[in-house]
Length: 154
Image 1: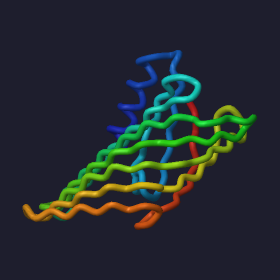
Image 2 (image 1 turned 90 degrees about the horizontal axis):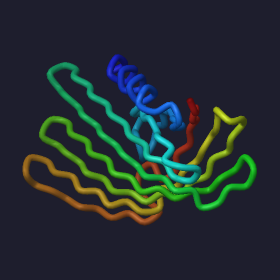
Image 3 (image 1 turned 60 degrees about the horizontal axis):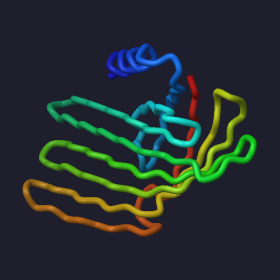
Image 4 (image 1 turned 135 degrees about the horizontal axis):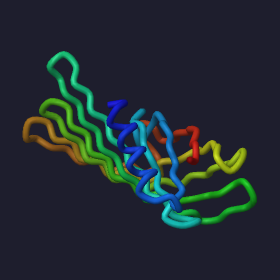
C-alpha cells in the first residue's frame, strides 16, 4: 500500500506543476484512516481521493473514497467549507456505499500546514451482506459525526 501511495503521489506531482496538492490522513467518517490526496481545482474548490487495500489472513478489505470540497468563506488563515463525499468499502461478502454531506473549517498555520475539523451533517449509507441490504439515513447522528486532522500542502 505504501508503494502504491508513493507512486500515485509522484504521478500527481508530475502531472501538473501549477496545481496545489494536499496530503493527509484522518481517522473518522471520511477516510477511516485511509491516506488521501487532494487536488486544488482553484482557490475555493478541491477534490480528495483515497484508496486502501489490505489482504491479511485470507481476508481482503478494499476502501475507496472521494470528496468534493467548496469553500464558503475565507478570513485570513481561517476558512469554512462544505463537502460532499462518496465512500465504497468491501470486506468479504459485505459491501457498503456511503454518501455524505459535511460542514467544516480549516485553520492554516502557514501556507503549507493546516488543521481542520468536520461535522458530518447528512449521511446515506447502504450496506449489503450476502445479498440482503439495509439503507440508513442519518442527520447529525451516527458514528464519527465529527473528525479533525492535519493537512500538509505540497
